[in-house]
Image 1 (cartoon, rainbow over the protein chains, first blue to last red):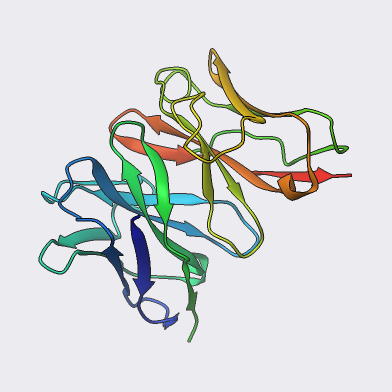
Image 2: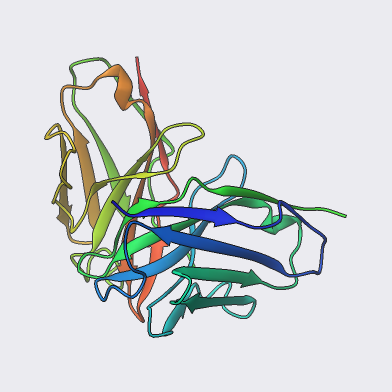
Length: 120
Length: 110
């Protein structure tokens, strides 16, 4: 069974870049059946899709975040990463990585999520 | 990017059935079969309950069912149980290979 684990700083200063990594175990990130995705959830609010990447490097982003988001993949480490630039307090959220099955566009495996606070 | 529209809350008594709606447009819910539903208990990761509008992943109770009519998808939970109390989110594929979630619905089991 695929497992995902997020890692990265829990506190980021305003205007700086948020950087997180998701490590995939129990399966290969190079599996052609999956995209690898980031999702966030602000405190007390709903889920927001950030973007996803294919193992080949093709990326797809939420239009409302596209100008600030970069998702990359490192197949040698079975990891993919998120960078969100110019953060503000509105970017405070629990950030989760998830596998997105290409046949259904359903997120079938999720990481536990990591809280990130934007504050000086 | 506008979210799909879900009711903020629904409630039901044990044993009853409830339905949660998810309304989008012809560019997402109405245009594709890629509608999914997720259950999220407090402090936990979301769990996939329905994919491709009406398919259940292995291990998900058959009390959960999904359907779609036009631009609105629905999740029905029959034989409501206390453990079903949670937040529920729909998601849909949207044109240009993007995805969108609904705003979420809090289910209360009375």
